[in-house]
Length: 316
Image 1 (tube, rainbow, N blue to C red):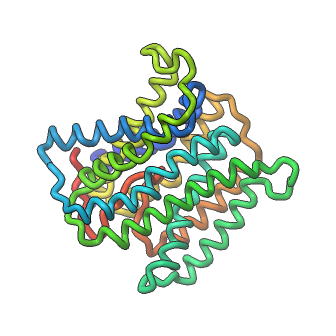
Image 2: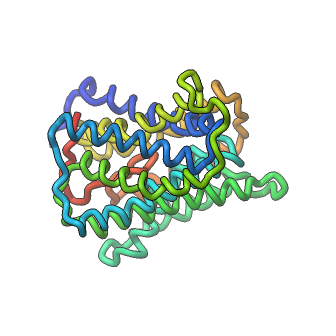
Image 3: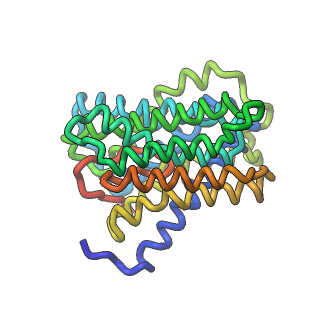
């Protein structure tokens, strides 16, 4: 593959990193008027609308069998259904900064579940070392030595979300190897299924705060931004970088997203960054680098299916 000039893919790379990094800010703002289930449902509803509009404009109608849709639905449970509720739940107990740093563990979980569930993809020594280093980094990131100050509930919820991302990514590799569709079509179906699955939870949740969905409400605009950027459009940008600069370059967005989220958390939400959080993040990302050395790239904020063994076909 011939790498395109930097000017052709760097803008898309920067926009993808900023969009995914800002997702944690938008979740925090959305929670000011909506329940976690409503935040999760709202983002996939908006994301599905954007993705299906893109398919209509480009006239790329998905051609999937009932079995294909069922397999996508199984992957969607881990990629864009359960985590999209667990992350807002976690952010009710931890800062957006800590949530974004813990989110960087997704490739570690993916490497673990791939090694456990896909026998022919045995983990290398480097990957095993990466998992061990990543686990150490999580302990440092959370400040595990300070038992009284340990954000146990928020950390469990956030790490559960990233574990589901890892399971969902592994399931997509196991179940979708024969699904012959481009990434935009797969994502449109996946996010649409998640919207259907999350609708009952959103309806059962307490009513939104008064005025939360008014046109001048910061909650509404944060939710729209979360759906348009972090749940749909940014995926197309990511695959554009893959196509123009290669998978390794695109995967490096994993290292930029926490920086964006941390900056926004400090400047916009006035959150505090404790000394051990960036130290732990560096250790985690070192483990991620080792764990990904022979792996396919994963999206930074996850939430979308990676089409297995298929050259990306971004609708950009």
